[in-house]
Image (cartoon, rainbow, N blue to C red; front, side):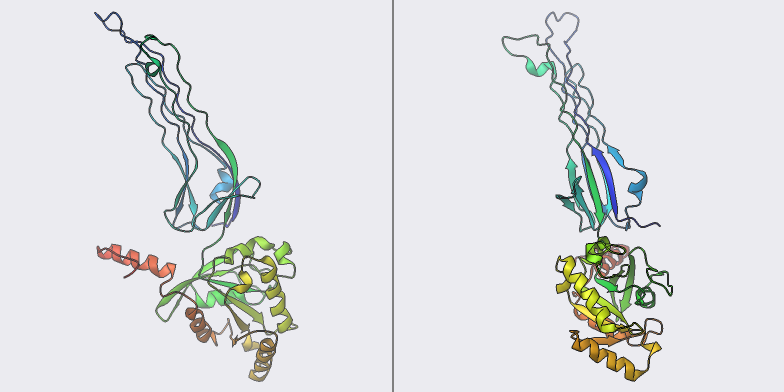
Length: 352
């Protein structure tokens, strides 16, 4: 499945149906009077967050969404049918902005969350509603209220418990393949990862979602390299794992570059708990790894975890530290508990 995290679409609600001009015509009833019914309501544009989606690729091929208009009013005081709402399904984590990308219209953070973006027009009044004691045969009616339309931007920010950051070729893809069910592309060159990847990590009977984003370079917060758009995918993470390549030219400088970009991006990324992992220790001896770890501590790292994404060395201790920053039950575990309860045929509560 192709990944797409931004899309522009056009939405239009349904117009209200017009009221009817009609008079009762029945044998032996000389003055039947007006009996034109009201028009029906137009359909709303409703957006709902659903499980099982993690891309906006569908909106590349379908960009215009128009709800149906309400039905016409009819004689015998029959009201036109209201049009059904047009429901647009989006992944959890989607944000909706106006056309200028300045105003946040909706932020979908939970499965099942629904937002009415545009309301359908109300149906017009039929001539029966205009009858008065002095105007017994009105011929006026009201057209339905017009439709509303607008262009909006969708931006997807993946919901994950842990975010994985680092310079290009720091070994992030190898790491996520080692610890999770992900199958990310691995290569000995920069920017092997071009789109974010998600993986479910299972450790000590716990589960959490790990997000891997493309490598950061100096100036990434301002759009350099792959750009700052992918930093949005780790805004909602509870903790970050910062991989530093031990085989790089200067691990301390590499760590500082990424730290500076997180601080420049804002949105409290730099304030999130960050675990520094000195990766690829299988390529160096223990003495060199210890020396680089001390160098990273001197550069500001509170704690350094020497690991090898290729062999798995040191990873259990790193995952233990990750669990210390996660809640008693993550979103993945909550969903799993609900599914297990459903299969068992019993009620389930988040407090179970």
